[in-house]
Length: 128
Length: 247
Image (cartoon, rainbow over all chains, first blue to last red; front, side):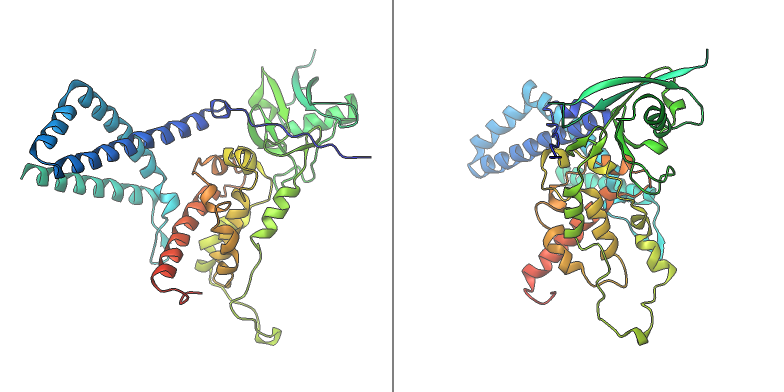
């Protein structure tokens, strides 16, 4: 008797078929905005190197209603991306101290503390 | 009249069917029955042509994995009482060819598992007279959860990357590679790295995390893969800075 295994194709809408895949795709989408914001900051650096007028034009574009709306969207997506990533850190970076596993909440908490410290340093630096 | 429950089972007979189709069966409802009991009732009383794999009926052998209401599960671990009042849709595990009805072709997994050398490769061979390779309870605890894998393939059915790229080595094989890499008696990490640290190994994983969510034995393949990404990256950096020293 000859075998004739049947292969089912993965549908393009596979990620809509379970809430866990939708949540995953949202997390992936947020990284796009994080990347876009980083790219815009790099553009800002280039504009800064091109002189006063170029930098003022960049700041004006960033301060326009559209620019502010884009930055707010990026902030929301960056927070979502960071929070979901921090929640996963105990899996990626399990620690052991004196032979005992460090509780996940401590690892996640350390990331939030580091985030707060870096944010404060940046804000102080920006205010100077 | 006693209570019943309906199962909608995906059928595929390669001799007569060009593609799979669903077939409905109504079986007695019992609180203590699992989906596997319902399938056994169908096989014994309603339709002897239904094909599926099973053995232990107690979540140890890993044979009876199926997609039950769109979720990969062991059918011996899925109680009818959790689906009471609805129809239970039973399909073969996703991302594997269907051999017949609920039976999948799992050859690709066996090849992938073999490719990661899932066995102890001692750091130094020693004669039998030298005794056992000793290990402390603490050293065992580091990798113990990964020893619980029963190769049931629920994680492969849950992982979209397995479905999208058939070459991806996949969660269970990667978790077992990690299990041996973490073992204090093992020295085979470099021998496994060729497959584990390749594009089709850890780097095909995008940390969906579904593998760990569906595992019936609480193994965490997603964690194993992310940890391996970090150790492989450190290995790569060491090799870049001091070539040849760490091999």
